[in-house]
Image (tube, rainbow, N blue to C red; front, side):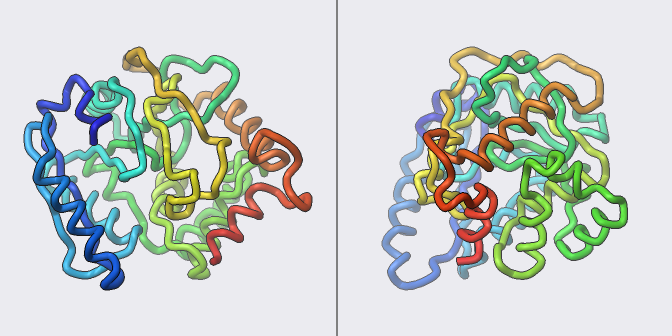
Amino acid sequence: MEALSANALAGETPVFVYLDGPKSESDQQANQKIRDICKNLMGFESVSLVCRDSNFGLAESIISGVTEMCEAYGQAIILEDDLLTSPHFLRFMNDGLRTYAEERRVASIHGYVYPIKNPLPETFFLRGADCWGWATWKRAWETFEKDGRRLLLKLKELQLEDAFDFGGAGGNTAMLQGQVDGNINSWAIRWHASTFIDDMLTLYPGRSLIKNTGNDGSGTHCLQSSCYDVSVSSTAVSVEKIALSESSMANSEFRAYFKMLKSNPDQSGPTPSGRSYFSRLFSLFKR
């Protein structure tokens, strides 16, 4: 919240904090601390706390929260509590939402970019959607399909598994299968699959505006690793209308990065026991 309040548009931004219900009695104290923090938050247009009486769980909490915000405002910017923003994050989100509001093929605006070594375009599109600091509109969120089994069948029917997995470099299909089998409870893989099947696009910045601190092992569905570490951009990312097509250059760079992760997830040596990164990641999901 401190990082977000440092954004130039923070004072014009109403913030809604969704606090899931405690899983157990031991969570009550932590929940109260969050309530106390929210009462004293400064620097925003307003701060509203939405408290759940019961524990929805990560997926349902986010799905219902995004749905409620889109119904109320027609669009929403979504951050989970372990994401640190650049001071230019809100400007990029708002510029993207405004620029592509009427482009029905654009599903979302995304703030995080992997630590790609080669320079990327100022902004670019990739097919599908993403989940680390993002924004969307009601008209796009309405395409979200909660039924992972239906999504998996559609991917296979359209023969999209290879493209969905960045030519075998990624593990999205396995992740979706894990959700179908009940081994993970991911809303994000279903959001990505929903938009990917509909051939929708997400706008990315050429420099990351988000740092995920949950990769220290504290984040849900996050493996402890330094391979996603980035320094958030100290300069603004300019949003101008570009062609509504996936960037082949960015797709190639992402694919190369995922291939590197499979053989060297921590960028510091070979993967333990020769197991691929996504194999290790999926094992974590199943715990």
